[in-house]
Image (cartoon, helix red, strand yellow):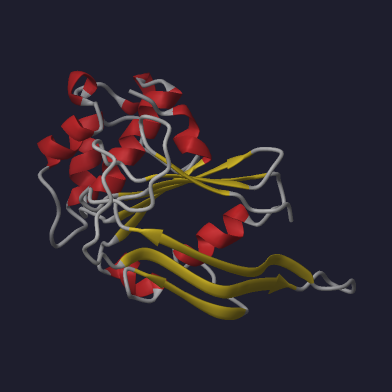
Length: 218
C-alpha cells in the first residue's frame, strides 16, 4: 500500500490542527495513484479550538485479512491507525486495491477487523449505524424509478422511528426544484443527491461518500 500523507489546511493556505465546527463528518473515498488523506476542518476563521471534542472515527492497529482459496491470505488493510475528529471532511484516496473500500466497510459495520480496534463516535460501528449516527452514500443502490423524488424520501423516512423533516432534507440536498420529478427522469447526479437526502434522514453525525458520491454536486 502506498504511503499515507496527512494534510490539514484552511482557506488561506496555512495549516491548522483543530476544528470548532458543528459535527457533520464526511469521509470520501476515491481512486488516485497515491494513498492520500486530505482533511478540512470546516472552520472559516481558521482559529484553533481548544475544547475537547470526541473523535468521529477512531482506528487503532486495524488489519483485515481475507482468505484466497488455496493461495496465500490477502491483507487488504495492514495496521491502520487513524483518528477523524467531529466536523472534519476527509478525503480517503488511493489506487485500486489500497484498502479504501475494506476500511469503509469496517467503519460501516459491514465487516469486522481481523485485529485492532475501531469505534464510531465511541460506539461499535454496527451500534452507531443502528443509532442513526452514521450513514452512507454509495455509487450504486436501488431507487424506484416510477415514484417521485419526494415520494422516495417519504418512503424511506417512514422506516425510521425518528427522522428529520422530509422537506428539510430535500432542501439540504438541493432537490426542492425537482421534488415532483420521477426518479426515472432524474440524471445520474440528481439520483446521487436523492441518495444523499436519504442518508441525511436519521440526522447522522458521520456520512460516508463513495467515489465522491459519483459526481453529485450542487
